[in-house]
Structure formats: C-alpha cells, structure tokens
Amino acid sequence: MFAKDPGLKALANIKSSQRRKLGNDVAETYRVAEPLKPVLAPSSVKSATYKSPLGHSGTIFTDEESIPIYFKTKDSVLMPTVYTLWRVPGVLPVVLTNSYVIKKIEGGANLMLPGTIPPFDPRCVAGSVVGIASYEEPLVIMAVGTCQLNLTEHTSVQGKSGIAVNVLHYYGDHLSHVSKKNIRPPTNEDLEQVVESLNSVESDESQLVEGTESLALDAQVDNETSEEVPESDATVDDNSKKVEEDNELSNNKPEEVGTLSTTDIDYLFKRAFLMTLYQEEVKPPVSATTFVSNFLLKNLPYVPSSLEHVVVMKKTSWKKSAKFFKEMEKAKYLKLKGKDDNLTIIEVVKRSTNEEVRNFVPHKIKKPGNKTQNTSTPAASGSAPVQSKSTKGNSKLNIIILHKPNSKSRPFFDNLQEDFNHYYSPKDLTTLMNAYIAKNKLVNPKNKKMIILNDFLNDLINGGNPNSRALSRDKIVPAFLKYFTQCYKILPGNVSLDTINLADEPPIKGTVPKIQIVSEYKLGRKIITRTSNFEKFGVVTPDALAQYLRVKCSGSTTIGTCKENPKLAEVTVQGPHIKIVTEFFMDKGISASYIESTDKTKSNKKR
Image (cartoon, rainbow, N blue to C red; front, side):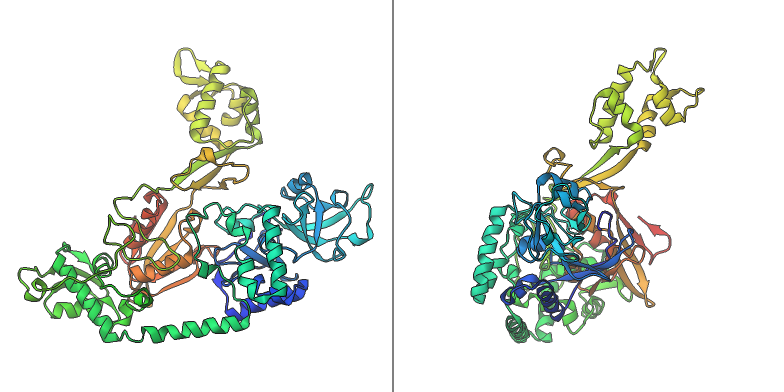
C-alpha cells in the first residue's frame, strides 16, 4: 500500500477534541479497555491527506515528531501503524510467522497461509485488521494488514494455499519515511515491560502517564541523547478531565503576564535600543530588520522565561519596527532612508555626542547557551539556537552523492568481481573504471589519455557505433553514469558513511534538494518571505522554523503548502528576510550551494 511515496501534503495540528475522538474511535474499533483510551492518541497529533500514485488516497496521522501513528483510506477503518503497536501492544490480534517470511513481507510480499504459525487468535477472521510478528518476538509487530481468510478455521497450514493477510503497511515502507528520525524496532523484553505497565493501568488509571509514554519507541531513536524531550512534554492526558485542567492552567498564564503592560514592553524596547547605541556596535548603513535581529532583540532586558513570549515588537504601542524607528528618528537618535517597511539606518548618534546615551546604565540581558557568543536570540521552543560564528562549520552536514548500478552495467561489475548491489561514490566509480581499463588493456598505446572502448563500453556509451571507439579517459565515467541511479544521503557532520548500513538505511533516490527562499509582494506593498523544500535535510521542522522566525524577525508566521509543489510544507514570515533565513540554514550546516533565494521585490534579482 505504501510501496511508493504516498505524496503526503503538509502536516497540521488537529484540535484537542479531534485528538480525543481519534483515541475513542480506535478504542471502539479494536475494543481497547477504557483506561487505555488516552494512550491511543499522544498529547499532540498532526494529520495530512495523501494521494498515492498507486491509486489510493486517505489520511495519515502522526505525533509531534512526525512519526506516523494511524492511517486510513476513504473506504477503510482507522488502522494503527507498527509504531503505535510498539507503544501500545495488544491493540490488534497477531498472526505469527518466522523471520524469513518477515523479510519477504518487508520486500513488499503478502503473508501466505503456509507461512503462518497456528494457533490463531479468535479475532483473526476475514476482514479483520491484524498485526504480523515473528514467533521469536511475538510482541514486536513488523507489519499490519487485513485477513483474507478465516484463520480460526485452520489448525494446520501444511499443504494449504491462499493469501492469509493482505499487507497494507510494514516497517521500512514509505509510510515510515514520513518521519525524519531513524527508529529501530524495540526488543521483545522492552515491550514486555510496557505490557506490564499497561496491565497495571487497567487496574489503576492514575498510573497511566507513568506506564505508557516512556515506551521503548522513544528509547530506540538513534539521536535520543541529543534530542531529549522534557518529561512534561512526554506526558499524555490521562482523561478528558486532565485536558480541562491543562486548559485551566494555560488560561492562568495570561494572568501571570498581565503585569507586563504595553507601556512596560515599550520601556524594554527603548532600553534595548539605548543599550545598542551605548555599546557602539552598529556600523551604518544597516537595514532595519538586521538592526532588530542582530542588536535590538539581543539587548532586551532580562525577563523571566514565562514573560519572554510577550516581549515582542507587535506587543508594543508601535506594533511594527518601522514605526519604532521613525519615532527614534524624531527623537534624533538616528537617520533613516527608505519608505514603508524597507528602511535603512544610515546614521546613529555617538555616545560622546548624546548625553542620554552617554549616561545610560547597562542592564542585565539573557545570556545565550554558548559563552563565546552574546548576540543570539533564544530560539523558540522546539528549535535549536543558531550557532555562534566561532562554531560555524563544525556541524556542517555531510551530504554524500551515491550511484546505484542498473542491469545494463552488471557485466562491468561481474568483470571486476565487485558487488553489483552496492552504492558507489563518483570517486569509487573512477577507481573501478581505471581498474577495468587496466584489466582489459583498453589504453591507447600511442596516447595514454585516450581509451579504446571494448564491445561492452562501446555499446553503452556509443550505442555500438564501430567508427567511434576512441574516447578521452575523463569522459568515460560521466557517460557511464547514465546507467546508474543517482541517490544521496544526508548525515550529521560527525557521522561517517562507513558507520551507516545502507541496506537498513538506504539513500534517497534523486538529486539533493535545494531550499527555496522567496521574497515577494503580497496584497500591494506588503512583503513576505516564503521558505520551502527544507524538510529532507532534517535540521528543522516547519513548526520549529516558524517559531524561530516569529521571534527572530518580529513578525507573524504561517505554515501552509508550497504553491509550486503542494507536497511540500512552506513557512511564510512577514517582511524581507532572505538573509536571516539563509543564515539560519547555513548555521545549521547546510552549504550555500543547496540554498536558492529569489527576491521578487527587485527586478530580475536571483542569487
């Protein structure tokens, strides 16, 4: 069912009421015990529709980290993924088989009746949704499908035929690729502990949070140590009453920040502005947006973390940075050039010439996590802060181009006794081609830069033309690459390709994507900046990027589908912020060659 990319549209959070309904529907469909209902839907659920090239369409539900938890087509019931079944074992009846058959299923095969192991669960009747697991690890479900036969009628499967289970989803299919994390199956021992916890939940609902969300699924994520989720974020609402209590707590939050009035926020921004002038770090000309992000926000006075979310420009009496700077110009602190929101600061007062700036007493500011830098703005929840310039490049992503041979190139590898099913880098193929040329004595003795193609290479490269067998050595490999499938692998800077098993974590077919950043006019003179095609790099989610830009650019952000490609998510922020977005991704380790920006507010300007 998910043998090919399902063409998933952009994910969006669902309402709390929809999340509770999701858990109730699953519990009702699969007769899950009442105390376990809250476990069936995580505290944050996203959904998106898809339309597969295989002809089916439907909806996919994921958790906060985009790990798929449920899926359904237009004509089917809601079905759990293997990740949900690892989180909550026992939701589905299980059909047992052996590890050899599991590998065949992960290759796209259905489960045949002779491959099953009786006895069967009484719920394994025709049309029912079941899980498939190895008898060696019966709790670790590796595939989900629907029964095609009434398995309860079979006490022996020897000598019988037929499809027992039509497999709809298996571990490692394209549904699994929705998540950017590499999740490994838990062990049977891990899930035995989860089952014990769930059994205790059925007898005591108060233990629900303690017994479920710390599941082995989270323990199996490869980068668990670098992306720890706070305990408070990992808890699950134990019932609808708990949700109401949480809402009451969130409703109390504005009362806590109510002590910070508009006048107070104005005062904080004015002090941040004066401190910037006092430090004399600004070197005009500088754009207004750069001034805000690099100086003003960094110098805001320290406030408790519970108040940080209200200390933003839109909460001031000016609402927009342009109005703020125009008032500062009237007070003769600076001089501006430009119109509307496209302002440039061309001059600022010197500390020696302005008494208020000279007598300014610096205040305490929030220190960033990195002691070597004091200019970054704390990132919003869910995104890592931008690295300092002193560390830039240390975490540069390792983007590797690989090539997988197709059938026409098999004789080449057979001749060299090399692995045909391997992934090769261009450098590897150049080395192999030189070995092939030497082994088959194809070098032109009169000119060693020229190669005399044998019948195999001549058929591939020249289409069998007998009159053009001579070819320059440096042109052979590029021509030979036409018979390979290009792939790429994106790894953290500290991870080498040698440490990765490409059979378990295959590269992505195609060329390396380029992040698209576009600034353009909207509704007349209003400028927005759109960012898309960044998710495959795995450095930030759309939600985290939107939260970061909302703070960094002091403007509202939205998440939607990309206009050019509806399969991609797109983050939009108000204002011309190409430079800020570009620097964000470069600080995340992405080379500028994979970032393409277009400024449509200026004629024919493309970088």
